Amino acid sequence: MIERAGTGGWELDFDRRMAHIKREKAKARMLRKSPWWSNKVRNEGKCHYCAISLDLELATLDHIVPLSRGGETTKGNIVISCKLCNTKKADSTPVELLFQQLDL
Ligand SMILES: [Zn+2]
Image (tube, rainbow, N blue to C red; front, side):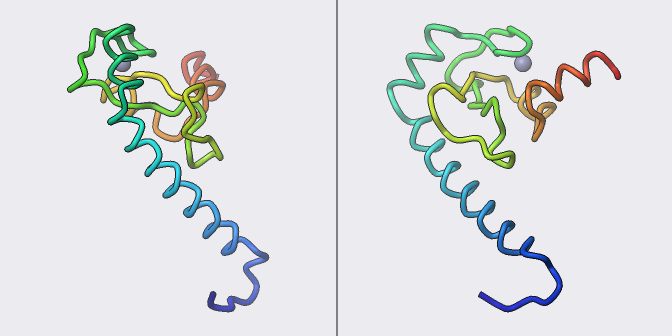
């Protein structure tokens, strides 16, 4: 790694975070191809956030706690989302979304 003066360790944390995101994204891609995901979409069949009906082609995999916030690709941290909600949610946590909705 390149030595950077005065960054207070942030660069290292950044590298570690990027590695985490890359690893978890790769896991998410694998999970999306798994029978678990197709069963989940078939059984639930709607967006977790707006409840619009979704099929396998339209469903996106959303991390409840975003990867960029330390979330992991585990079945408990994954919900079905439509593209619009997934884009709107971006890097927010559920608590932050709630605050956004309350307009505080
Ligand atoms: Zn939605």
